Image (cartoon, rainbow, N blue to C red; front, side):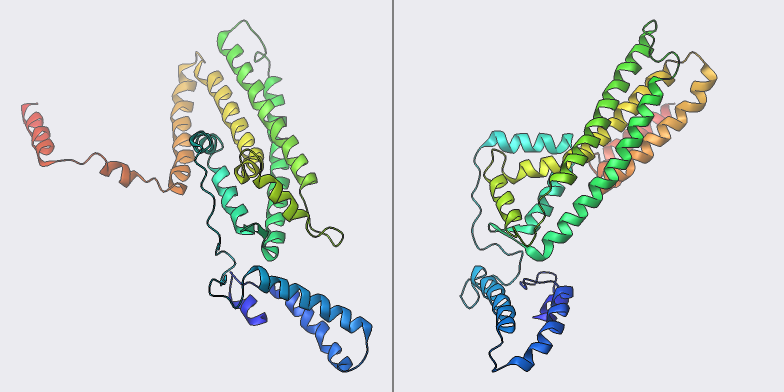
Amino acid sequence: MHAYAVTSETSLAPYNAEDLNVLMTLIGPLRESVGQAHEHSICIIARLMHTFAHTQFINFCGQPAARLDVDKRLYNPREDERRWKVLLISVLDVALFGSLQSHRKSIDRVWVDGTVVVTRWKNFIDSLNKEWSQFTVFSTVMLAVDVSFLAVPGIDSNSVQSQSASQIIAYLSTLCAMGSLVVSLILGSQIPVPNHENSDSPEIFLSGMSKSLLGLDGLALIHSLPFALLIWGMIFFAAGLSVVIFHSTDATALGVVGPVWVMIMILIGWPVLALNNIHVSSLIKLFPVTPRTRRARRERGNVA
């Protein structure tokens, strides 16, 4: 069991490698009480045997259709025929910058056939807490930047149309940053963590979410809100700043800032497209240059 947990990422063991090391050091002294009426030793061994027997039971060990990997699903998932839900999830995933599907995949790794993969749950919770803690810091910084932007003389003046537009966009950025901050704090404080008194709390929570209107996609949407709201806040801030820049009457400033602005947009879009497996080479292949096109270009060149 220990070697299986160490060498395989899809081990069915109910404990991770570190916990198994601790259990091995605990079982060693218990060997001295074999054949003796020692209540404490019996209690410890019985508790471990219950855990291992329960794991074998839910994974159908010894049966023809036994689960060999923790990711393997033995039950066919119920197909949701509601097209509106599929369409809604697709639209929301785009609006949330793909984070909805990313979080859904993470949830599927810890919730298999209606049971929680205990060995992965702790890492899942730790990664979420770390992510939300970072978003809390970023949202606080973004909120301070938006407030400072609104405090710039002339931004809050309604006498100039561009300044009024930048003010409205800055308000939207501030609201998004505040929303990301509040949601991160709420999620960080309300996330279910297993404990000795109620070790079934994650399973109860995920089971309840799976029966909701959007199912586990709703939980993935909730987990995506801090990131998505923060990105929208940055987009609105960049849009408000661009309005102020490009409504400037100074041609010299536009000539200097304009090319830099375009370059920054290209550098931002490059990793976004690359991470979604969209490359310039693949886009060029969509518009192939045929021999007829080359001949037409050559003839135009000769005429010129």
